[in-house]
Every structure is written in C-alpha cells, then in structure tokens.
Image (cartoon, rainbow, N blue to C red; front, side, top):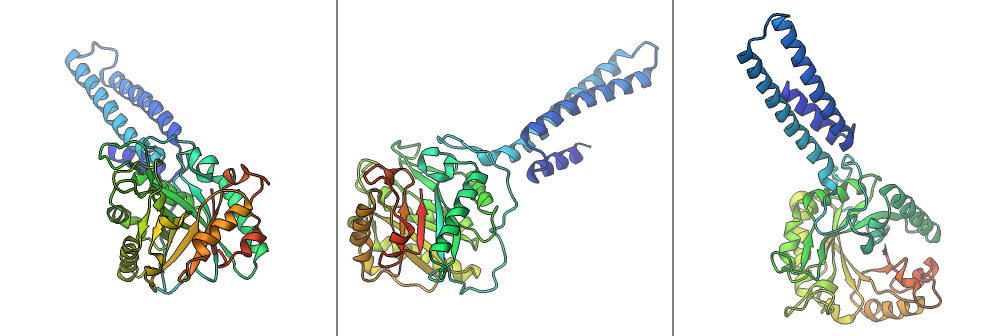
Length: 374
C-alpha cells in the first residue's frame, strides 16, 4: 500500500496534476482516513467486549508508524514538486510548474546552423531575481507574451531574417560575497537550471543560453560543470567577461576580461560535444562593452561546430550605444556574428529617454543577429 501511495504522490507531483498545497491537503485527509479505518477495524475485531490492552497498544503503535512513513512519502513528493523553485541567496519571485522538457529532442543532422539565416531574440536574467533582468521581473506567461511581441516586431522589421526566441539564463552569478569557496559566485543548483529548461520548453523551437559570470573561479571548470545541459541540442552558452576577475579583484569593483586563449578552449570543448553527441552547432555569446574585456579577439578560431557572437552589452542613450557598438564590435575585422543588448530601464535614464529602435539597430554594421533584452 505504501509503495502505491508513494508512486501516486510522486507521479502526481512530477506530472503537475496537483500542486504542493494539494499534496499537503491529501496528506492530512489520508492520515485522518487511516486513523478512522484502523479505528473501525479495531471496533469490528473486538466488538463490544473488553479490548485486549496489549493488542490495542500494538496496533495503535502501528498506526503511528504508518502515519510517520506516510508523512515521509509526502515530504518526498513535496520535494519533487517544490524543489525547482529553491534559490541560494536570491529572492524567489515566480513559482512555475515543471513542464515536460521540449528541449530534448532527436537531431537528424549536425549541420543545422541558427545563424545567419535567423535572428535570435533573447530575454535575459535569472528567474529568482527581479534585479537581474526581465526573466525575473514577470511570471512566465507574462514574460512569454512580451517576448513573443518582440519577436513579432523583429519579423515585421526584417522579414528576410526570421526571429527565433531564446531565454538567456544566468546560471552562475557573480557576487561580492566570497562564499564558502572564496570564488565570489553563486552557482544555480540543478533544480533551478531545470526550471529554466522547463520554462524554455513552454514554447516550441525556443533555445536556451546558460550564462557564466566566473568571478574568481576557473572558467573552464565552470563550463565543464554545465556539460550535462550543454549536451542538449537547444542549450547554448554565454560568457560575461565583465565578471571574470583577475589578481584577486572582486566582482563589481573592477571590470574583468577574457583572453582569446580561454575562448578558444571553450570553442574546442563545445565542438567536441557537438561531434561526440551528434548535436547541431552551438552558439557562444561573448559579452563586451569595452575593448579590454575581450583580449585578442582577432585570434579567436573559426569552427564549423561553434558560432561565436560578440555582443555589445553597454547601456545608454541611442547615440552612445551606436558609438560603443562601433568601438567594440565594428572595429573587429575578424568578427562574423554580432549582437546588441537593449536595457528596458537603464537605456531610458539619459536623454532622449528612449530605446534604440529596430530600424536603428538594423542600420548597424555588421548587422546584429543576436538581440538581447534585459
């Protein structure tokens, strides 16, 4: 009986047929039913004659054991139901059901390139923080509505390059706190990353980026930590050199940097995953708003398995963003794919208090094929 109850509760929780509060309600009702059932059994067993005290206490003890074991089962079911929304040091803003993962699917070919025939339109942030971008500001349904509108507007602005929607999720967050390992980062646990995968899977053909803010950790080790997810066909990678610190500098106190040596290592690593697991080519996003954030970009290798995008992620007025784009993107003669970040809030701070229009973005050279919104 206990095994059947266990399977039922866990399956219900995992398949979203009931939520956590419903599991708790069923637990209370079932405990009450168990007590009533066993009480009825005792009455039928002993009738109206005097009850054998020894037998009664033994069965009463069994009731307690059963109730205790049942509560353990309910705890496990609740763990599966709620664990994807747990957070380490980040405020939890949205609880979502764990949808069936649509990002795991068969791949018929290893030469399905996203760029340059499509434009990636991405929402950026972390679902557990309102401060890090739009992903944490809205419920998943509202977020999807907004992202679909952006994608539709891009399709209207440039019908020749269909938009593909993406979520750009910060999986490793830089911190000004050293943490237990002194690396000044918060790593999202597997349930948080699975939550991001689940939300990305709500819409067909969406791709997911896992972003790394390395802090004082070893970037290569952090990439390897994410390998179980990078083996998935629609999961790609982003690196934020602003938070790749050197010489003991603390994130937020100085602007970090990445060398072409580390970029080439990541390209080789992703390329090996593509070859080994017959995956479509990966997209690698490298953020940049100063020249020194990416050292030696002209030495970044070309790979048939990895499409590298240099993304201008500085905020400011339209004229400042155009200037920055020319300085850190257009100036790189070897660049193949480029991107730009639009800040819904920070870009409005300076006059003329408006966002860079899609027409203005399309006039940039090279033409951005990755548009990120924060």
